[in-house]
Image (cartoon, rainbow, N blue to C red):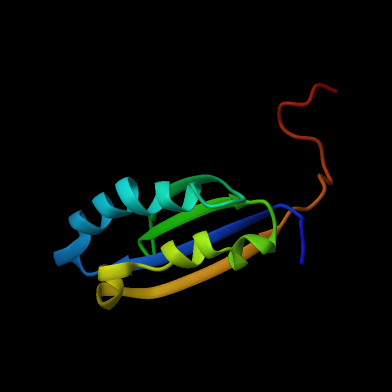
Length: 107
């Protein structure tokens, strides 16, 4: 089990008839529930400027062990919105050491 910090990205489309309710649930219920789980450190949502899926959420997690907790298993998924979600994509990224100075680094 890895303790290397990771980014967990989820991308989805949602049926337009459920979009307002989905976004309200995601922001008020789902994200706070995930952030209450051990090892879920931060969350940020995005909307696509072009192409799809339309919505993306990027979470910082403490390692792959976070997917094995009972707290996560109790809140994962799209609950009542599952039948209205399409184009689901999930991708995880392991932390990688900086290979170049940042734009804010003074030379």
